[in-house]
Image 1: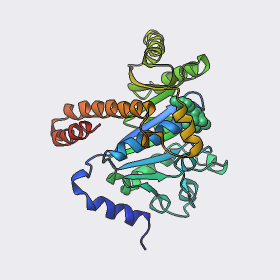
Image 2 (image 1 turned 180 degrees about the vertical axis):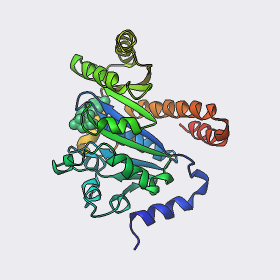
Image 3 (image 1 turned 30 degrees about the vertical axis):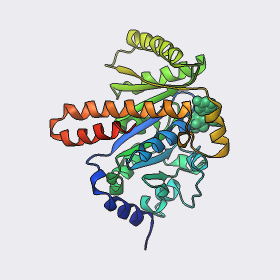
Image 4 (image 1 turned 45 degrees about the vertical axis):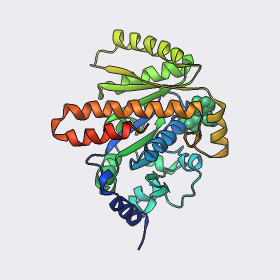
Length: 288
Ligand SMILES: Nc1ncnc2c1ncn2[C@@H]1O[C@H](COP(=O)(O)OP(=O)(O)OP(=O)(O)O)[C@@H](O)[C@H]1O
């Protein structure tokens, strides 16, 4: 049967030059809800896929999934059906556009029963189809409860999104503190800010507090910012992706993606055996 998995496999084999040797897991999380995690996840995935990477977007906001709405796609089965054993991960994959696939989550409470510590790790590890991807972007729920820490633990890179209001910053700090128990490197992304200076100012304050109070080894880095923008909010209402348009917000997100790729490239350069893969990154970066 020509299911989503077969479609994915055949698409991959059409372009051997871009086939990855590794899938990078990037978790996008936040302390407080409503700070733009899903908007950023969807648009980061879009920018990477527009640049030739094969990207999976995993809606892991367990119980409150909404990426299908943001991406304007219809889904029939989702993660809950996989966890119930009714179908495989391949059956629920949605091809959003060339190079971009959604793993839809569930927005109901039944899925909350599936909070066994290792269930998602097992499920992602067994899904060999994900090996075909360059990136798996995991949009987690807000906060530090339930499965969220498992997703963060699993990820190669964790991006903590916050807006510059005191409540969100407090919750972002709590996420940093908890996550630092298992992750040494954390990235911060500031959303709905006036400009980069505001983002940097808030970051420096958080970093100062973290350096003084968090005892675990921690390397907290500034990834970038996304300004408050009508183009972003109106794209969500129109169910389009703002990174498909020529706007400041789009340029800011492309610059974030580019920084993330540089960071991954640096990591690759540390590993001499993977030098050819890092050259692959360099070529792609030049296209941003
Ligand atoms: N840079 C921005 N400028 C203007 N509006 C924004 C910006 N980023 C996000 N928004 C708006 O904020 C709202 C919340 O965004 P989003 O759903 O992505 O947040 P979330 O963190 O994923 O929420 P939840 O915790 O509920 O999953 C959306 O209506 C979106 O349009």
